[in-house]
Image (cartoon, protein in one colour):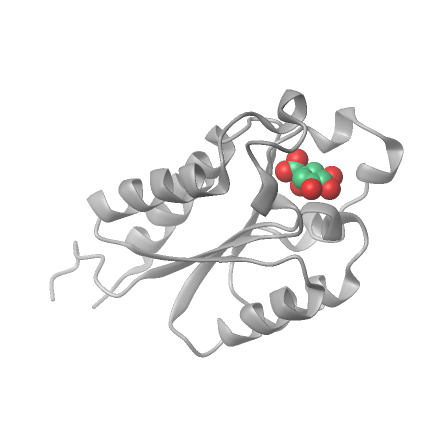
Length: 157
Ligand code: DQA
């Protein structure tokens, strides 16, 4: 395998609670794209670059934690996560991400700092590589672009 190859680099995309309702959920805040639209778009961008994506959405904190723990042993190299409402409440999800020691980007469709005060605290931002908030679905694309560039620069096979 040459050093330009991106074979076997995997990115896990995690969507938290209520993001399964995108498209019909408060479209004035979250836009009109569905979760399937978002995932398909990311899959295409990654596929063109030869990177494999794995998608996971759950409304349950325990399921999200278990999926993130699994990332420690399933070949995941990078995580992009929108923890949704768990952003503001879940130390357990934060601990799971920290345990993996995997780099991750925190994404929010809306600008959480321009909304209610309870949304302005994140349990994730200080341990994330970066945070993208308020750019709608473009935020996921930018996070993916960064993750792919980062994996490309690290590969030494
Ligand atoms: C969100 C912002 C959160 O405050 C909210 O609970 C969500 C979605 C966003 O993508 O803008 O469910 O993470």
